[in-house]
Amino acid sequence: EAQVTQNPRYLITVTGKKLTVTCSQNMNHEYMSWYRQDPGLGLRQIYYSMNVEVTDKGDVPEGYKVSRKEKRNFPLILESPSPNQTSLYFCASSIIPGPGANVLTFGAGSRLTVL
Amino acid sequence: GQQLNQSPQSMFIQEGEDVSMNCTSSSIFNTWLWYKQDPGEGPVLLIALYKAGELTSNGRLTAQFGITRKDSFLNISASIPSDVGIYFCAGQLDGTASKLTFGTGTRLQVTL
Image (tube, rainbow over all chains, first blue to last red; front, side):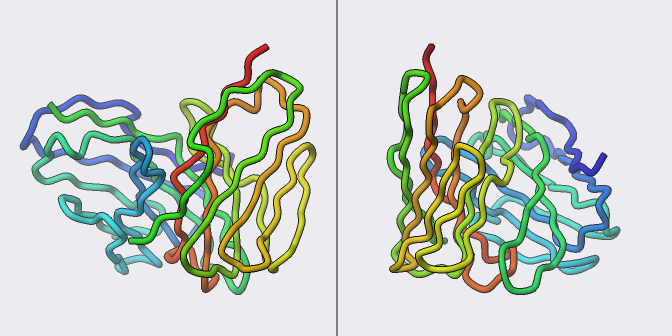
């Protein structure tokens, strides 16, 4: 089944304790992206990657890192999490499109709480 | 970064009622998309619109690309309980996912 898999789905951690949220897709998509979802703010892009070894900042990159060493994986790293990073995180992927809509496939989400 | 404003933020309706929601932007887009997020899941694409004025249907859902290219509308007819969720609009200017801007979401609750 074509899908984007995120782990963990739920995590409670403490301020300053480094964590990684993994994301993997099995569709051979070039493009991958991380979003955070907060009440009243919708989905905001954190980082994206157009292909292997190519990453770029989205709208809210502060406090996050990413890497794209392989096409299928795009982990999100919080080096020193803070309570304002408590959120619901989504990974998404797609092919690199031509003109027209780009259909993003989303993972099921990772709910992170930082105490 | 820019965000799209969706209205209403939330709505409670009875099963069988029709639903209307909209999305507005201060700048133009060349593509409008509507996604639905079921509880506990990631968003899934419902409808994509490519041309100003375009009206597209997907079952009980109908979406329109505003002629000013700064807004879009989604209607759901004869709502059912499984319509519950958060609906997001998204605008795209140049056809690349890196430039996809999401709305703030409309939460829909359906009562029996």
